[in-house]
Image (cartoon, rainbow, N blue to C red):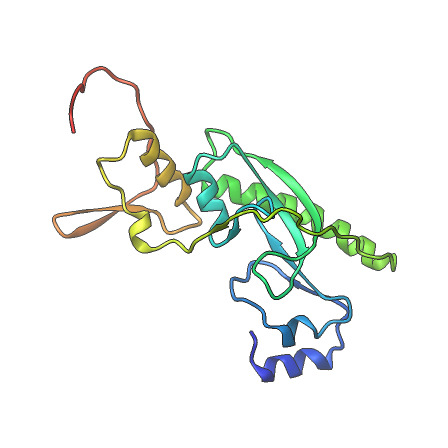
Length: 196
């Protein structure tokens, strides 16, 4: 996305603004400075918290009760620019990656329309700086999606939910073969006591 040929093509359009949605590459200054009004990014987390990779997956896996969708001006940092619009999302016990993804997309549609309406009225896009530092989530690896059967049942349930479709699915290895797990339910029972 940052190559000179693409930036030259974009400049020919003389864009007022660029929206960057669902793109995981880091934009460089040359591209950020191309549109007159800037580049607006979208991140499905409550910035300044939970910057970085895989925000919907981490939100479920870590057992968060809510998150948000955020539009912000992209700058040199990662998810660190001024916030334009933020909308909360409640995460309930029945949510998985698919349902949370749909909630994020529904928010995105509403927020995007508000921003476009502001631009069409030739109004200034108002934003506020991220005054708190927040935190950054790391990129997940293949092993992060592997079920360790020593985990407690709630952790396994959250892991499976966090990686359900549209994502890659949780997995475990048995006799050198990988098995995908798409749905589980933690059950309370007194049948198994003091097992490792």
